[in-house]
Image (cartoon, rainbow, N blue to C red; front, side, top):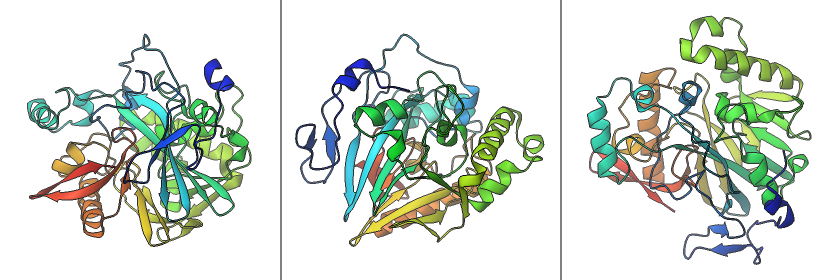
Length: 350
């Protein structure tokens, strides 16, 4: 896919230090490109969003009338490692699906207390790009254009920032839900979107989705996704490394086990120069629920009890260690610090 015509004409790299296309927010080391309009379609400035996604497989609440504009990536540094957060667009999910065991009135009250619409917000998809050593690494690749019309924007946003698909050397997956994996193939010719990349996925995640029996055991809403994911994994199989928790997946990047949302879900810890950043995937997926009510059971979690326990454990780790977080479905750009708030937690955006 090509970026919009305006992006093609004005393509610029925005890695930290490119003064013509970026500005630095005071005090937090983050750089935000100002070359392109943010536009309405990706709601980049939404105060919060509704998350825990693969649920989007059942949702078709799309707003096709909203125009698409390239979303300026956000840059961050972890020691000498350069990090860029790039939007893949938004997904739309029914609240009743995402919170099947919670009275909607309770959810509405929680959202209102956090300054968001009582019905929730469309869900951001925040892909992370990392420049480390000789590698340019994507952590997850979005959904591709055939999942929901408001998503699948990663390649346009990468190219608008001057990053060509053939410069990506590695893709690391947190898990294999459609909104994280399906963008690995081009929508037109079914070829690899990042032809020079190798792939890393956790061994338990690979085993689960590549097992022919999985499609018979997952809930009905997940069966189509299971078939699609198995097909894509088979397509890229020859270039895939299966790794385990604690393994280094790229220089300065380590897999951390965070199961529950899927059987082999992994987060990725980035560490360099005494600084750390946790790429959390879908563990903490909503700015209100994940922090104020991590015990609520989420419809898209494969093992809801285990996912809730993982949320609480990760929240404790991030708060105690003062480790910044990027959440795939948190409000754009998904970057913040976890703090304790009484018996719960809150996310302080960076």
